[in-house]
Amino acid sequence: MPTVAARKRAARRFPPARGERRGVRDAGPVPPRVAASLGRAASGAGPHGDRARPPVGTEDLVGAPNSEAVTGPTARRGPAVDTSTSRPPSTRRVLVLGGTAEARALAAILAAQPATTVVSSLAGRVADPRLPVGEVRIGGFGGPAGLARWLTDHHVDAVVDATHPYAARMRIAGVEAAATARVPHLRLERPGWTAQPGDRWHRVPDMAAAVRDLPALGTRALLTTGRQSLGMFLPVTGMWFLARVVDAPDEPLPAHVRLLRSRGPYTVDGELALIRDHRIDVLVTKDSGGALTEAKLVAARRLGLPVLMVDRPAPPDLPAVVQTAEEAARWVERLPAGQPG
Image (cartoon, rainbow, N blue to C red; front, side, top):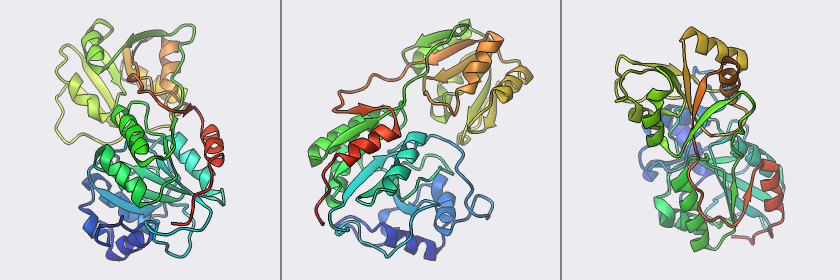
């Protein structure tokens, strides 16, 4: 657990909204999966007590029920500022709903802009998340209404939703909250993967369809759809699973499921060896896009394996969408600077 001194330092860096009692403890209990990570982030230590290691790549969604505030391993130092009531004059404050590589890249760009203050929000569903540059808020907002209040209380000038492509509820919440608080909203979403010659992709609209169609494609599956969907595949009979996840599930797993805790980036050679060693004959994945985990698709193509590809959820109507952190940064730069809070 974080030390008292570390929690106090975190509280000074990101005080509570108006109407809340001051102090990290009053914000509610820290999610168990991130308690250890918060202590390391505040002290600068890594998972084994060393200095914070370079981030390695994982996806984290926004929406956990509790909240905590820390600074990233490369956050800029300076006098404590009450971010709920004051800020430097003529600056714009941007909330990045993050947890993806694109969100971290955007935070780094915005942190270097003298007229911009960036706050990144993570859910805390990953035990050791990659922390972006700048201020970091870990925890949920209490739905669209809670997020709208937070935007108003903290004088946020713009919202960039850079959450995972499958974080459908958070996308809707971000749009609704920004509209309620009357602040500009941008969606930053990397493009999905594109099938190449030799690929044997079988696209399905959702996870339920993947569970239904999987037995027709193979008997030994490399399952890379994440911890939250793992339970849907457990009842499938006649299958053996190698389930690759960042954090282990809380419940015990049956004998036909082997758990592999790992996170990218991955190499093609490593994925080829993994598939061969475990005699995998079908790959199950979401169309997440990006380079961090694309190697598994290359490996499946070379080996002629079928790929069960779960499509992204249908996006809501969005006011603005870009695909790269650089495009998002240019959008922020075009916004007028905020007024002193």
